Length: 312
Ligand SMILES: [Zn+2]
Image (cartoon, rainbow, N blue to C red; front, side):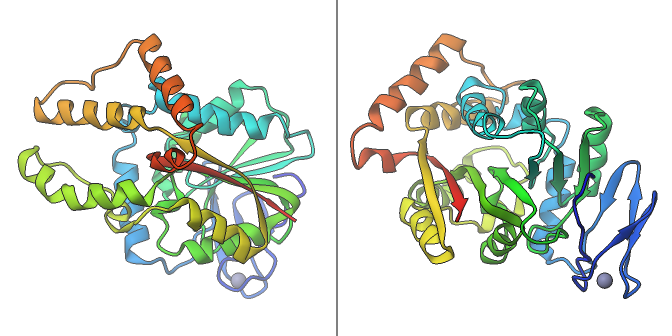
């Protein structure tokens, strides 16, 4: 970690590190094991803990089960990565929160992006060990943190971002407050591919029916509690926190029906793998969505939003 200052997640005083551990003046100690900084506070709420276990347990199948490498997902992940990589330079500090299996980290490294620090963070220590072994790259720092209690001093990051993670947080208010605190003036805060509340409500109502007809599977404990966001939620969030909402992008209309339709087929007919559409078909649906979202009103029928803020 180059020129980044850490604070104790228990008492907020400065952390001093040696090769294997970090400690504060109040004798709170944290460990660095196999290149992973474990900076979790002692107390975590139950949903956060259970969600960490759920995600870690799915790590080997995560990309396939969420069809993340399908073009309809890849396209929107790459757009977020590109937003950052085209603005980042050798002095930039980037924090990725809830990085999961490192899918976006790999996209980043493929862009040959310049940065001073890239902190890859996760709530699950097990997931971090898995990613740090898989993507063994010494310019990346792996940190186990709770987004509600980020162990960095204020105003240090140029980019703080997460993809499909914000709706998992048990306390989005506290997490956002922390993200704003550690972001420099002029820095960016990005929420990629967050569920639209309109669709999420409908899906919640229909969940009971689908669970009766489909084979059992495990679900993310945080997904069970989340409500998603409306376009107004993102606008109001910016206004109430003094952030400039520089981009609110609609993600998926037809693509959403394709995505969940393929998931339905997979589960209904006990398929070995999810059906993959040919690339040209995926591209056509992405293009059709883009055309559809030109019309006012319709852009709020999207399944997800990507919101990008700038701190003034
Ligand atoms: Zn302390």
